[in-house]
Image (tube, rainbow over all chains, first blue to last red; front, top):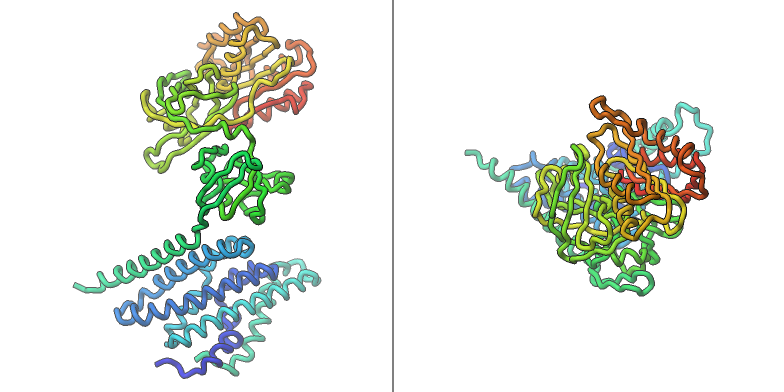
Length: 197
Length: 373
């Protein structure tokens, strides 16, 4: 049974109260490594959003029309990963053609989206939560925007913290983890207001 | 039998195939840049080409060979080209091989940048002279236990024009686990007057792709290709004494230069040629060089062994080539200012010899070398 959740509720819930990064803690590697400056954080956020939306749509179709009818659900990990890798590959070619500036800014991080856990995570949530096609796309888009919002917020805070008198032992990743902890508390604090299922 | 054995691989195969097809279709559409033109040296040559490939290979297809010792892998930095059109900032793979000035002038590694638009570029005029030659291996001779002399008869084009001291990129076919042809740079050891041949001296480098091929697979009579000539290592047009230092297969450019000078008549300048080896079995062309020394009054050949064996019965100089060079520059070579240094050998030998030469008042601008790593 598909969950009876209002699409608009689902959209905002996936951005805010069930933020894929701060509520589920998926996609942490690039979240920490690319949040040093806002420009590349912005580019990566955009790329993650586009890939998430497209892959959740395609993976839902494959799940519904191939894996479930053929009783091959256990293949979902490997097939989802193949789909994600191919989409990233295609996206990389298109970005290279359309905007060299964005291509240069994303650099090595674009291929690394392939192994961003947030993207595989969203595709797996579709299956666990029995979303419909529309719900899947909305959840994919919302999660992408949520990821984008979170990395931009973290990049902005880190910019400020650069000038703050952080104790020597906490500089760099240390203080970043503490910041992420506070951000997560702020987001999770409202989790009762909106639900994703 | 359980049908899952078939359905599971089938599902993965079909999905994989569909995605692969999608990628190739996108590649065809997105990477199709259509017909473009490349303008070289403000109108000197105009190329009509198809976009989408690296500049280096695009130029090579049109018969313009930019030097590339690594074959376009971005690891030698030789394929520099000045790009006048705006093609965006340097890629992360480029700066390690470029100086600050080159960065500012938008010098690029042509193997790294893709041709996506009409381009205006600048290359040295000499590159127009560079061709791909095919020929036949006429003779392979063992000079020492690890150096072979390879003599190639050129067929198409049948003649080469080069200046003594330049190098060519020998191209070998795929063999064993090496897929695709491989190119490596070697100095020509034949004199330029021998227009329908080129000769290379090739020392076996353990694990070397081309040297292993030459030493273990190459046969007389086999077809081979080379691209060239490259490089600006040559006798300078002055009267200053030449101090030449070489080791191992570094003999090659000096053999070419010395024979070239010999053909032009009596030497008009003093030439001191120091050749370093470990033991007597690493020495070669001893008779040839001594014959030249007897013929040319102003030519002095000084072979030196660093670790002569007892059975070598060596009566010549003993010691590292740098020590012998230092001793000669201080005590034997007559004072003249300026002197010119010419070096060919391993990077370590070259660096050490440059230090000895500058310490003996040879200006850094008067020392010339090709470094072959």
